[in-house]
Image 1: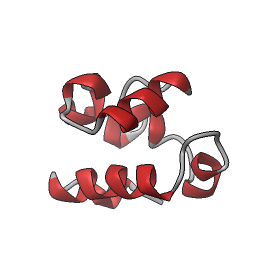
Image 2 (image 1 turned 45 degrees about the horizontal axis):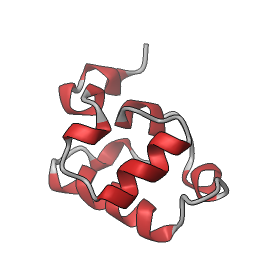
Image 3 (image 1 turned 60 degrees about the horizontal axis):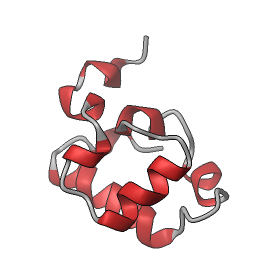
Image 4 (image 1 turned 90 degrees about the vertical axis):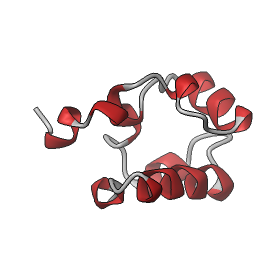
Length: 74
């Protein structure tokens, strides 16, 4: 089991985290419902997905940094 799975915030539903409507829509469309699921993919792989652009990545990274868990990003 990956160590970041122990972080409660990473296992909360994305829709409940206060991220933008666009972020929630894109991640749900791509089948991601928790941040822990996103962390299983490298930045380049996420950016290759339809709709997951640099704005979405930046919001994701900023959210993790704001909550002091940015160290989980690749």
